[in-house]
Image (cartoon, rainbow, N blue to C red):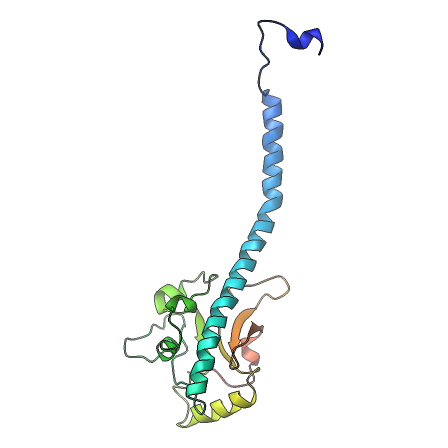
Length: 195
């Protein structure tokens, strides 16, 4: 050490204003660089949580189809904007309540439209057959049993998990219980829309 550093009576001062501003600028730069990565990690975690919830629903669905193999449930395809379930409506939640103990399974972690809070589910039931001809649930069940990996049962009701590569991605559970993505809801192999 040299003599300048050991002057008696003058303790070494802390940071100068310039040093403090440099440190704050570096911290700000690091935060700016980390925010997109943290946001991406959050979206990925939501997607994984959604897949886990749908996997739980898929397990309940498979048990339901084991008990009722020849017919699909006739239930409303909630959620829809401005379309709330009435207490006497049959919804997929009521149909599967014996097989799925936890109602939170019907909540997508990415549900930013509050569908779960207002309608009890973040997912849309694709085999909503209320307005189809009598017996259509049996025809649909036959088709779904022949094409279990192509027959979507429930999907995200909105685009909760977009990415730059898949801007219209919907997490989906299929008739056989597997979960994967569905990009285009208008290109489903079976007519699912109910008016």
